[in-house]
Length: 447
Ligand code: NDP
Image (cartoon, rainbow, N blue to C red):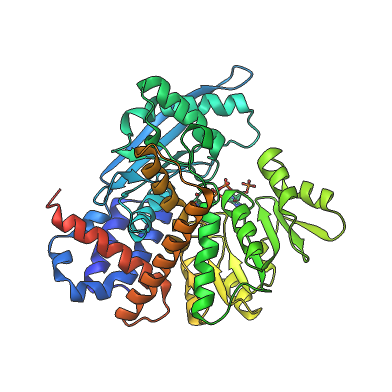
């Protein structure tokens, strides 16, 4: 239920942003959590902080023309939504996927404001991307697309302005091409303009692993708070991209067994655990589908085409693919089969009904804003190393990440307690993230 004042804010958001359903969903979730804050802090409503937070500071939409290997011309649409810079330069990744449109970029940018705030680091919120489909494209085509995309984007970004990174369809290879074109156009070696770079040109240790590792550390903390651990647990991870692969790696290191993971063609079931070297080879080097993994892994692995991985019973669920992948029905099925914890590696992977089912069943539910914040936090550490022309060791960087995730976990719990919702990480993350941004916005005046 929405607080009376927030209900009219939400109606206004619906009217002003027609058809952007994912953005509406992300706004509603935050508004549902922050009702109790308004009672304690009338100054937020008086200065219309909430209305202001829901309106991006700037939205850029541009044409991205490029030609394929046969010389045929293609036109895609590029986006960058600079949502909120109260805490620092806009920060958030770029997504290349055919489903990208303004509503997706705005939902991701909106979430990013609160997530970045929760890290305690000086970064604002933004997000971008394109409806470009990288699947099936050659390396040269991807490079030409990235160069064309950056030929427009470069004028809007900068170390102190807006710092993109990767997301779905944008990994280290794409970040390299984007940074190369930025450097060429501006004639500046401005490493801090983009994060997720390779180690040979300004990247940071642990950035590649950070989202998956961080999410696993967050779930480890949730389990610890309930007197238990990953040890011997059956875990299901969705996706098999950047976040999923490093989630699988860290879960295995902490004693859990990942028995299934997926891609958009289906899922693999591997009761004895996943061979991570083989998965990395197939996904990161050869860019194949998961049926190829099953073919090479032998009899103990089954490939199940065109089905949701959430039909596999498990004790810990770590959705790491895309938005709205766990429905209310999936959540009920997971709870019935003994799921005790959920860590959202992806952004908004659980529908509102799914979240309600998990919370009502008392499942430890780590929302994406908190659980996957390790990626952007390590990006901020990459910016810090770029600014000081320094590079830290893997061990030191991983320790910093673990410390940040423990701190986020502790603050979510403390805030949820303070507002009378003990153990509710959704409320804790939304309220804590909101308050830091709102206080900075109040201090900066009406801008
Ligand atoms: P990748 O592109 O590396 O991997 C995405 C994975 O999810 C792939 O296995 C892909 O399968 C699958 N997937 C994507 N879209 C769909 C879909 N519509 N249906 C089914 N499967 C799908 O992306 P990342 O791992 O970087 O990102 C995954 C999630 O994590 C996203 O929600 C992203 O916003 C979030 N995230 C990422 C961060 C990062 O640091 N990279 C930071 C914080 C959050 P296929 O290849 O078949 O499409």
